[in-house]
Image 1 (cartoon, one colour):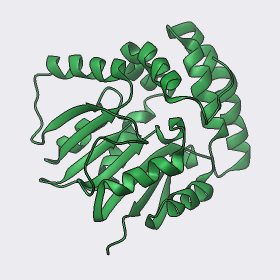
Image 2 (image 1 turned 180 degrees about the vertical axis):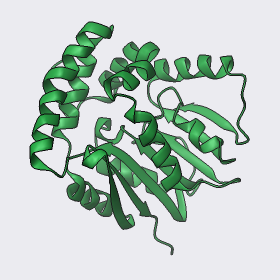
Image 3 (image 1 turned 90 degrees about the horizontal axis):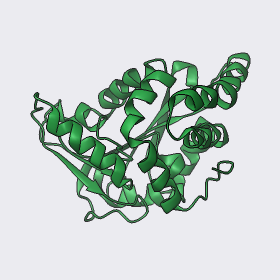
Length: 240
């Protein structure tokens, strides 16, 4: 896999995720030291989905994050462009005994051309996936299209630690240690080299907020998690 390129062709990125789908959730837990579960819960809490709400969870992978929304009674569509991820998620869901009160659907789709009608959802979320979209601003505009007026956007993405010395150590881990762990544990370690580099190249919190505003969202703000290693941006689709 060549050095991360934020203009990478969607088919290449989808194939990369297909290759790591089987162990994706396990390796996420390992490489984040379990923090990914806390980040997921924070996204669900910030989204505030209520019974009867319709939530679109983009870049949903194996639909693990979508279960946080159906647990509240909201109906959720888990959408991803990797068929391998969705198939792995479908297999795990079929094996689960517990059922959440909200309904869950899995849909294959590209964030740049979402297969949903205008204003179909009360909230749209995307966690750790916006940086893999070939044109993030166009993707954000598509998310706005399928969100009802007054509806919510929640973007959870890796970001920039606000304490410079800590950020320096983190980036050494990201570009040095993480790929080495992946080489020893993952079947497609080159995918994690790409992921580490795409995280390092991604805009900081304020820059991403500007990108969200440029796509037509309003009331944009963010909350740092884990000292800013992850940031959750929230916004509203303007009414009228």
